[in-house]
Image (cartoon, rainbow, N blue to C red; front, side, top):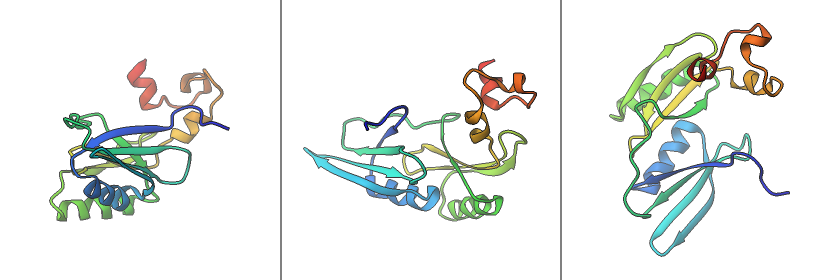
Length: 156
């Protein structure tokens, strides 16, 4: 059966190997596909939790501006302590980092780390994406009696 729905996000990078190392370390991802063709190198990275990859492409021309300051990739972590540890490690490496903070329900505990190209990776614990996605189609948090999600607030 062919893939359906959202399958990937693609980012241009200056050094694919440095980016692979970053996403392996800070997002728990692994390379599942590599390709090199006419000076362009690309990889697919996944966390193996769903059929979704981040595509990193090096050498495809002028790099895109990085995601941010608000735009980011979000990765759920197992605990607050894991976020604290990863953010502390990133600071020791000299990576731009936004200190973890608790933003309450449904956002949870979040911190941000910049990847080698300046894209923002958000680490979170306690976000309620799974609950929002599990609602019947078209049913908002307001109709279920639960608190509105950040997406509900942003899009009205």
